[in-house]
Amino acid sequence: NVMLALPSCGIHDCLRESWESGDEDCSLEILGISRKIRILTILLNLLPRSILQCCIFIVGIQYLLSVRNISDLILNSLALTFLVTVDEMLFAAFAGEQNAAWIQATKPIKGRSFRCVDRMLALTHIPLGMFMFFPILIWPSY
Image (cartoon, rainbow, N blue to C red; front, top):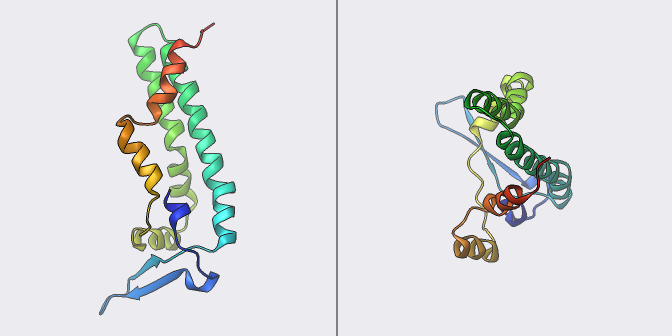
C-alpha cells in the first residue's frame, strides 16, 4: 500500500540527507520513488516475497497440522521460524556495515494509504491471513 502511494519523483530528487549538528551521522529521508524503480521493486521484490510468504504459510500450516506429538510440533515450528527469518539473517551476513548504517539512519517512509484498502481492513476486523487459513483446514490431507 505504501509502495503504491509514495509520490513519484525524479531519480535525483528521491532522497534527502540531513546532518545533525556536531555529529558525524547522517539521516536519510525517502521523499518519493521513480516510476522505473517502483515497477522494478514491485516485480522483483514485493511480488516474489508475497508469493513465497503465501506458499510458506500454506505449506507450513499443513506441515504443522500433520504432526502426531508435541515434540515434533515444537521442532517443526522452529524449522518454520528459520524459514521465515532467513532473509534477515542473509542481510545481516552479507550487507556491509555502511549499508546497514544507512538503512538504520533512514527515517520512516511518509506516504498516504488508499482509502479503499483501509476501509476494507476496518470493515472485516479479521486479519487477511485468516481467509487463507480456513481452506487449509477443509483441504483433504493425504
